[in-house]
Image 1 (tube, one colour):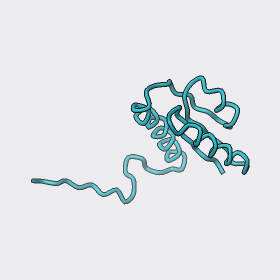
Image 2 (image 1 turned 180 degrees about the vertical axis):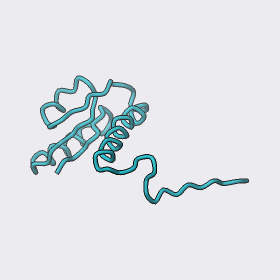
Image 3 (image 1 turned 90 degrees about the horizontal axis):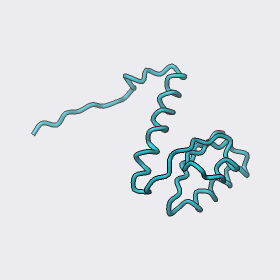
Image 4 (image 1 turned 60 degrees about the horizontal axis):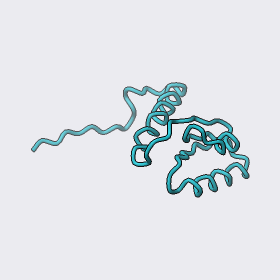
Length: 95
């Protein structure tokens, strides 16, 4: 089973690495998204996406981009209409 993990170098880095190593021990396939230059990611993960290191308050913005692209590509490969997703409720509130 492939597992996607976000591993920024922040306050919970060691806990995330511990969880990722547990997945690896159970023979999960790891796709890791983390900071460039982090040697432990290349050692642990099957595939790694390196993003520039930046302040941890800005990391959620940067880490969103590859996840959105990945979800778009998976939906396209599955034949889903990415422009008209099912069960998407659009509403407008007028005051």
